[in-house]
Amino acid sequence: MRGHLRNPELLATYAVGFSVLSCLVGAFTYVSFYLADKPFFLGPAALASIFAVYLIGATITPVAGHLTDRIGHRKALMGAVAVSATGMLLTLVHSVPIIIAGLAMEASGVFTTQSVASSHVGKAAAEARSSAAGLYVSFYYLGGFIGSILPGIFWRRAGWPGCVTIILCIQCCTVLIATRFWKD
Image (cartoon, rainbow, N blue to C red; front, side, top):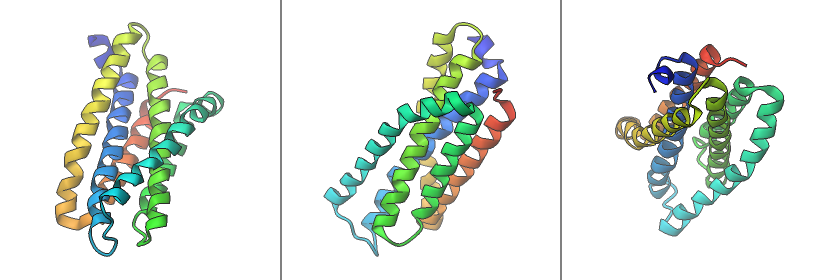
């Protein structure tokens, strides 16, 4: 276990996992508040149906594996985060269909990033891969916990644009970390 926590490439992978779920949870938690308020006033059923965009992300995951094999982990991650970031920017447009398209892109990018990062654990761990994977999952879920709280601070101060800003900052840090520490 100590060896995993001294491996910079694995630590970077854990940071990527942390940020991935943080962004997803943050986006889908606070977009509900955004869309329930003016000018949209979506009700509970409409808000719940937005989560159907997860299905798009889930169908993309197998494609992500093939793409990662072809272009490498870093390039696949950068592309996936670019898709997520573009999706987050689209949610700033005051149009429900465009916001839903943006959320579909966010989910697709996040599911792809998760696929890339979790497969990278096996590449970065020289030994004891199951414990390395266990640590990854721990950091991943810790990121989800933080993603439920951190954007709330920005929500209080700047509303949805504040949430989008912190999510984009996290995504930029994700790319910088992987670019610096991942080997392809």
